[in-house]
Image (cartoon, rainbow, N blue to C red; front, side):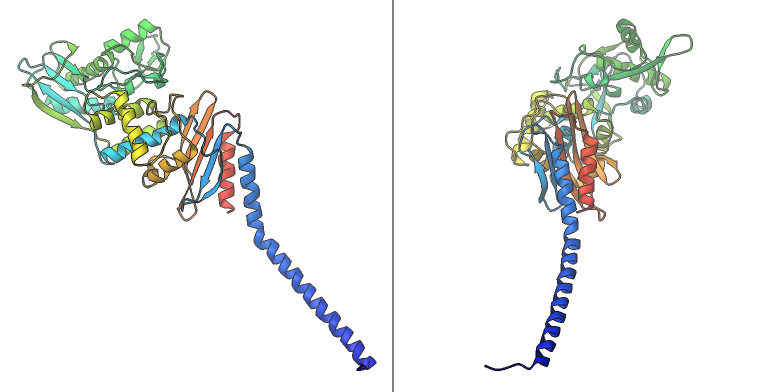
Length: 419
């Protein structure tokens, strides 16, 4: 046995203690570093868990990275009512078939009796200012006008699922030839008389008659659900502006049709591109515009007259053949019907394809989105842009929950910011 001198034993213990201290110090430093490095992940996991905990078993949440990786989701395959977020799909299909720069048009003919005939093709933005400009353009092209004949046959007479017969603007029916989203906006003056609430819009005789008949109070109302009355209202607006431009109609305003032999005197091409029209549709969540575009799209793809069935067929075929979705149920194009059904994953496919056009959506800071609201239903879908501008995708479908959708979206934004 080799004997170690005592002095060396003391020295060895000292070295051992020093080494042990150094190792413990390094371990402590490594532990602190590890905790520091892992902290963002722990925070993100906690926040995502908090977001998911707000989603009931009947609702859905999906958050996806710019690269398409699911960050977190719950019930993302469940088919739910999308409400007005469905407008994103309608807009996407319209861009696919028509192109961003497409412009709706309206044609004007004159027959051998000097009747002016107006043929509508579903332009959703025939507002008062447009009718005034049309009248000014026609005044220089016509020597005289007898009757004003309105041709709205490009659309069939349709009832949209979810649209009622009320006078609420969201129940405004569609037609190939309409003015001001098929609504009238009025108030009463100091003497109690019914007057237009818009300086650019005159009060037409038909509008005045309908307001009195229905006993309406001041505000904006769906104009009519009866036959050709929407087109007649548009015709009376045009008649007013033609008179203002010095070329008044000498006859009556009536329904009719363009026939072979009528002479095309003017074609109005919308001042708004499809992309600009969609931006207005999203800004005001305009149901009339969404279904006007849908029915016109059906006529464009499958031929006139435009019908709801043809428009729905276009949306369904686009969902299946282009987006490769299955089991999607579409009843109309605005989201007002509770018969519409798609999942958060389905909406993700829409958002990914729609991403190049996301600027037409409503923006709130770094969030671009579309909301949806029906009784008992709240939805929201869109993009959260990172600080570098890359879009994260999110879908929130609350179909059976009293949760606050704003707080859920704030939770999503916070989790992404900390990620």
